[in-house]
Image (cartoon, rainbow, N blue to C red; front, side, top):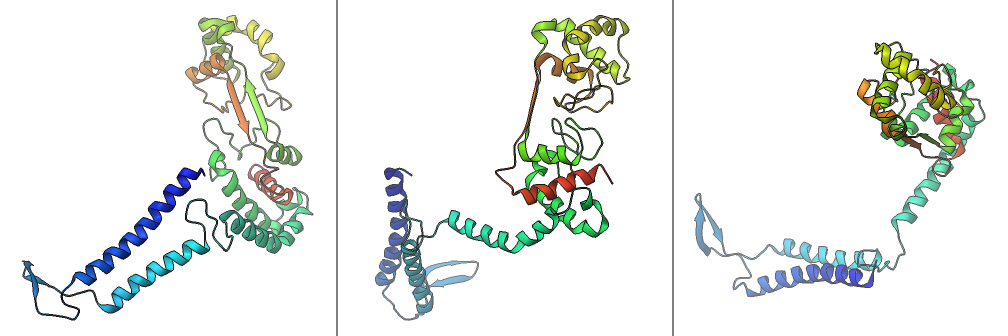
Length: 297
């Protein structure tokens, strides 16, 4: 925080506190009656008249108490710009303390399940471990994959048996740990708009959908020349590159003609962040076991 904003915040905060205090004291001092009276302020509403009485003493004293508490709080804790407070408390330090406490309590539990393989975690007796993995998935993965792990537009469904990079336990764990960078180059400039639409027809035909036979025939040589390096000659994809299977009618970005054409025309870029610097290895192991369980019930 710059010096200007630090001073700005401090001045406004103190001005509000002491301004309210001054207003309270000045108003009380200006009142002619320090005890209760039958005099009114001269106006009434709905049959109710307001007496010209000062604040009750206990109310006034409580107000002063809040002012004193506020000043002491701002001296002890951060609140006045960049002043750190005499106690040296920070929200980062508080978070680190709580995380260290949690790690101390739960580390033995995580270690217990980390000693088991992902396949062993699938047994009934380890169901509590999968539930822990489910909660961690909800906290770290559901923003993209959904709370039920069924995915969304551009985010894979983890409950089926279709995998971009493979569904083996080690592969799933690697995906979570290291992340993934998927990319398909745009072919619009190479194929032209007519070529893009022909290729969309060919790709749809691979999954058994109706497509214009002439367009399929025109696009097939182009597919063999441009696309087989990733999707293979029969369109079944390649796990090593994260190239999707085009023959199974499962679509990451939608399987309509226009959406397939858009993918071919402009390309796609998919990123899954690495979690190795966010989660411990034991936690990644539990999430991997849970994700594996979704398609291996």
